[in-house]
Image 1 (cartoon, rainbow over the protein chains, first blue to last red):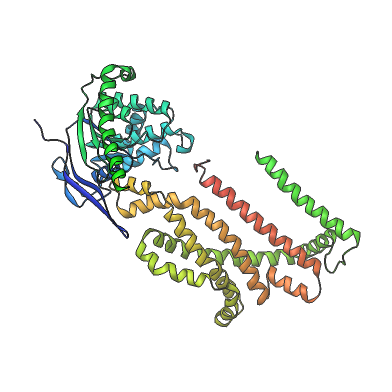
Image 2 (tube, one colour):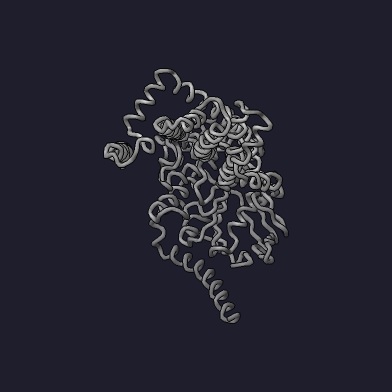
Amino acid sequence: MAEPKLVIAGLGKTYRTGRGETVALKDVDLAIDENEFVALVGTSGCGKSTLLAIAAGLETHDAGAISIDGEPITMPGLDRGVVFQSYTLLPWLTALGNVEFALKAAGTPRHEATGIAQAHLALVGLEGFEGAYPSELSGGMRQRVAIARALSYRPKMLLMDEPFGALDALTRHHMQELLTAIWEKHRLTVLFITHDVEEAVYLSDRVAVMTNRPGRIKSIIPVPLPRPRRYELISTPEFRKLQLDVLEEIRSESMALAALGKVLA
Amino acid sequence: MTAAEYLAIATAVFAALGIAWYGFTASGMIRPLFLPSPGQVINRLRELWSTGQLAADAGISIYRIGIGFLISTVIALPIGVLIGCYRAWEAAIEPFVDFIRYMPVVAFVPLTILWTGTGDAQKFLIIFIGTFFQQVLLIMDNVKSVPRHFIDLGRTLEMPEWRILQRIVLPSAMPGIWDSMRISLGWAWTWLVVAELVAATSGLGYRITTAQRFFLTDLIFGYLLILGILGLATDQIMKYAGRRLFHHREVA
């Protein structure tokens, strides 16, 4: 068995503010295998985005270790492509320009960048929109460009922070299908943050459930559903069962929190 | 609302004000010394135009504001960007800029005359004092409002800091900076006229002071109109240029 791609062990993060300390993450353990799709679910504020930011190298941690291919993560790097929830397309560049921007930063020669960028826009179904500016694109289209951009320079893994969180339900379903199709065809190691249980189960090989502050991985639920997955899958009993399992894990967590609230009150 | 409708409303307001002005003066309720008629003002302007006086006065004022504003902007731009990017530089410069900013520009007029005489240099200096400190703060805010995620994107692409500044922060802040320039140019007009009213031997402001001495109210009104038109025109040009330069800007 090969070493996991991303290894997180005993990771902790504490924010120090003027009013005291907030423990955002404590003893987080998670390993993601090569070409595995792991979804991380938890309620808002549980620290899942903080975990992703640490994996991206945009945030520091103060306990434990995190490494990719055995290399400790201390800084952002081209080996990790990041897709954020908010729209991060540069508004002064076209769709093509935004993908080329990443390729050029990654050192791709100019004459190759255009071709690669076009191919990746085609991959996310945006052929014909190369010359469109972000303001001319819908929310779903913008996130598709962001995905194309993150894939274009061939990172070792993709970190996605609620990338479809700001989209309407119909567009979100469409994006989930698109991402699954791309992933099933091209295989890539993915850490996908979401608070949408259905989305987590539909997309992933394993669902990691995170506890509330301090954030910790409470349980990991394997998703042995067959691939390729089509959207019809979500109405099958197997899917429903898994969805309920994950929900139950989250629910018992929030029940515990509510009980704690009663005790304190 | 279409652009044509917008223009129609704006023009109608100007026309209404013009008619009201004409009505007042034609009724004879007000002596021409206090409020000259539109005809008088236009005649005066026509006369000054034919002698070349109007073009000369406007020319020198435009020259002064052009140079003064340029000096101010060229210095304010790097400083504003610097303090917008780095907290330590902000601590070093921002409070000082705020401190100066609250001093009335008019109070600097005697000092500037003492330092540089009553020539063009003094006009540049007044325009500089009046606009520079405001510009620095406006530009700082423009730079600070660059979305955090844009900078994070540059970092995930392993771009060095100066590349992020050059390729992400500046292009992102540019539309806002352009707007700040447009707004501060409006203030620069005020400071120019203030400088010319107090101590000058040419320019629109100077002509207004001499007109006051001879009770040439029509000239004062005429030149005020010219100042308004010049201000409105530069503002519209800046707006138009901004739209052309930053056409990709979010509409919503």
